[in-house]
Length: 103
Image (cartoon, rainbow, N blue to C red; front, side, top):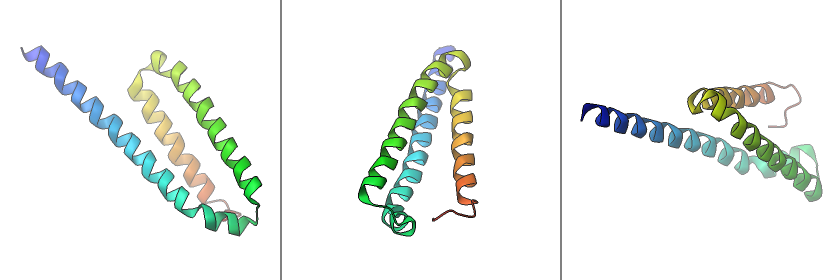
């Protein structure tokens, strides 16, 4: 019985952790989405140029999903998620600290 409870506890912890990661990335993307009009104005780009930027964003998401699909079976979900979140945070910090950032 103890092993079964331990397994249930680990599964619950994993679910809560995954949900927290999705919630965090959702908040980050929502923050970005609310700034799109200001960023567009600061860059002076057209609607078509903005749309092409979103195409690039979606292409990056598709490539990231493919890479994650290869990485998780090799390393496990926890290390892949930790590395992915750290890379995401690093990219945001690097972009924000850029002297030409229109944010």
